[in-house]
Image: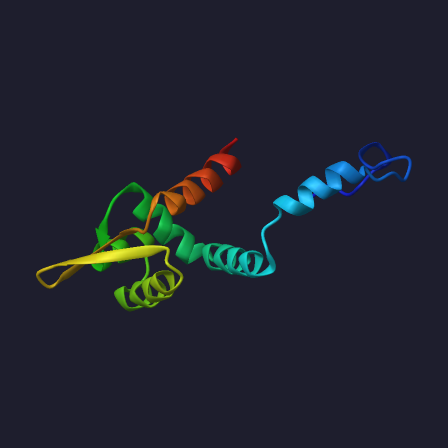
Length: 120
């Protein structure tokens, strides 16, 4: 990470009141900020991110996820419970098999956007 240099800071102290007012009005409320940062903390775990990335490709059962991510089925199940609790994934049962997928397009965009950003 870069540190601030003289080139990337303001050389004079000035506040643009109209801009500050517009941006403050557009900011999410405290509860929304708390929920969003909690969501990002959940996603930030490497194992959970790999699970979410796999599910961003296609729906998978717990056994398939364990094989893809390289951890035990028990560990995958534990992570999936946490991801479900935070409304990141959902599942459907087909007989005795549980198939998981990302909950919605917001999560798909979040995972895809993070990967695209670091690949640039």
